Amino acid sequence: MMMTSHIHQSRYRVTLPGGRKVDIRTQEGVHACLKESAFCKDYVSTTLQDAIQIRQKAELDQEDKNCLTQAYTLMHFLSLNADTNTNILLEGIRESDIHVWYNDIAIDEIKKLSTKPSWVLTGILDIFEESVLNPCTTLACHAVPVAIALEGEFFQVLANFIRARQGGSSLPAPMICTQINSIIFWSLSVATTRFDPCWSKEKYFDTLESSGMLEQFLRVVTVPQFPESDTLMSNVLDTLASCRDLLSKKFKKGTPCGDTLRAIADGKDGSKTERPVIMQRLRGLVGLVDMMKPMDDTVLKSQQCGHCGKSGTSKEFQLSLLLCSRCRLTRYCSKECQRADWKEHKKTCVPATSKPGDQKPPASN
Image (cartoon, rainbow, N blue to C red):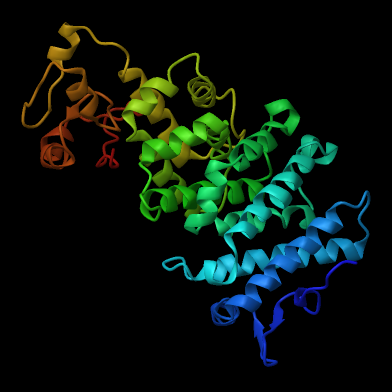
């Protein structure tokens, strides 16, 4: 006989021990629920087990879908409204149940969605189908869930989900791309700042590359989304650009990421509606990778800081130089030197894709 959790009484209201009702759409309600530790842990476990049993049915009726949506809503709002600077989420959710969420529900559901003809043909999910991605997005703001996702097969399954669109030749709808990009942005931030010990940015991107997700991220990030997303995704791409060793190994021609990046830059992949700010970053990555090609001693000796004149013949020094993102010619040994040289450099700094005279201060490299 299936257990019945309190979530079935109302999608957003939970009755705590003692009869108090709280709204999980608010931080106050979620924290009150999580602090009732034993109750909340059992409550989440029961809800997830109910969901697993329902999903085993060959066909779901509307009541089944409502119950699943309520379960997904619970995980979504608990992780959305739990303070990300503390471990309060784990006061009310067992780590084993986070494994259950990813391995027994989210991953399995995303695999099923990947084979649906409607997804393959349109890249669109209905409200019920999309609801399974909502908790994946908000859980990405918390350390333990991110560690579970990175160490398991979640990102590999997510990459295959994107790749399933028309055999990889098309992309998901903008709303789905927004959710996927949010997962990348927050999981990068959490892995590199809140893991114990913190992951290096190189380790994070190397893990994504191994799962196939980094290649697919390069594709979905080209889809135009809400304006604020340009800033968030530019930060991710700038962080990727700073991983010089990873770029030199994983982005050269003949590699999945390298070939996909060049196809996007050439207009042969990615969104048909261009996203200018992001495309500038992606084309800059192509130039950065190309700059890392093996250099002979003559080339090495010819490259030095455009301000202080500092030079060196080691490959490590040459790869550490910052290339002006506008003219793509002058190099600097530090951002300080680049800023100090701008007064003189702007006289000759012509954007590589613009006509002479179109001169503005360069964006940070």
